[in-house]
Length: 380
Ligand SMILES: *[C@@H]1O[C@H](CO)[C@@H](O)[C@H](O)[C@H]1NC(C)=O
Ligand SMILES: *[C@@H]1O[C@H](CO)[C@@H](O)[C@H](O)[C@H]1NC(C)=O
Ligand SMILES: *[C@@H]1O[C@H](CO)[C@@H](O)[C@H](O)[C@H]1NC(C)=O
Ligand SMILES: *[C@@H]1O[C@H](CO)[C@@H](O)[C@H](O)[C@H]1NC(C)=O
Image 1 (cartoon, rainbow, N blue to C red):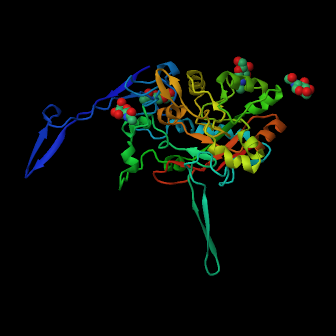
Image 2 (cartoon, protein in one colour):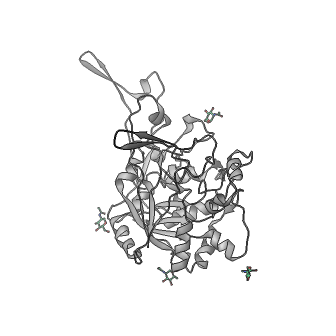
Image 3 (cartoon, rainbow, N blue to C red):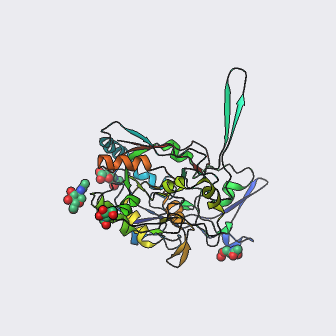
């Protein structure tokens, strides 16, 4: 594979009266940040997978964080894995619409309540009566109910320290989001909203597979779902693990977390977030998982559990403590869609014995936004 190296000249220009003095870095009094090394894949938009790096070839430069795919879609790219969605993938996905059945994948926005992470407040829904009409106002933490995580949500960091944050393609810093008057909208969820997200979705019903084997599992514990289990789920569903996804697919797996959560007595739903050892089922944080996902060239990953990956998050990967969130979102620009309501979808898939469908997803068009309800739908 070939890489393009872009070099940047770092100079400072000071205007003194009518004369301009150029100070070269070596004579500057204050230290300059290290030059950003921008290595990117040489690619051709009409042949998007020419020079496509294998998992083992990530990252493209050793200065990039763990397994980052920075530069794979160009150094300034803000779409990340959504680039896998192309006119051809949307056109091909229309063949999934056969029965004319549309299924909502979103929870009501006040579920779960109380929120599973206690630092996040529940939605506030206010009604405003006017003369002859009424409005309502939502105050919403986008991480509480069904959610699409955008590329500002979860940077790489070494120890949670803001000065170590690294976002997708190194395009923004913490201050670009939070400093007073910050006007940079880079990596905001408006990108996804304006791109148009649709195509083929695939469901792996991990919970249904476990039940078919009479195996019990605890969604309220850090149960780790492995890539090899997901391959076995595919086989159980009659799919071939080597090719059940296509580039651009939205891959979704079902843990039955929402089903079991909604079946809890209200008193237990109320206590769950405050348990000292609160823990939830999800994907194993490991290189096996990363390799399995990378090779599929999917646009997004979705599930019905809290964090896609198991919670609490984090495992040592290649010498660093990493959450899958860091690598998926800030490494690959690959959004996670969490707390989906997959019950009706799974039922329909089993009834039709078909686990792929057309989907649409429309996040909120909020400039600089961090996450959003996905407003996602599956269509058979
Ligand atoms: C890009 O790929 C297309 C299709 O493979 C090919 O026809 C074209 O010559 C390529 N362009 C460049 C600049 O390599
Ligand atoms: C986190 O790591 C950075 C970089 O190594 C270091 O500067 C900072 O002091 C660390 N912060 C904490 C709270 O350990
Ligand atoms: C699961 O349990 C049911 C009811 O006991 C039994 O009929 C079935 O054969 C079991 N399936 C497996 C795969 O063990
Ligand atoms: C998937 O691979 C298997 C085995 O190589 C092949 O028989 C099958 O036709 C392939 N299916 C698709 C949809 O490409």
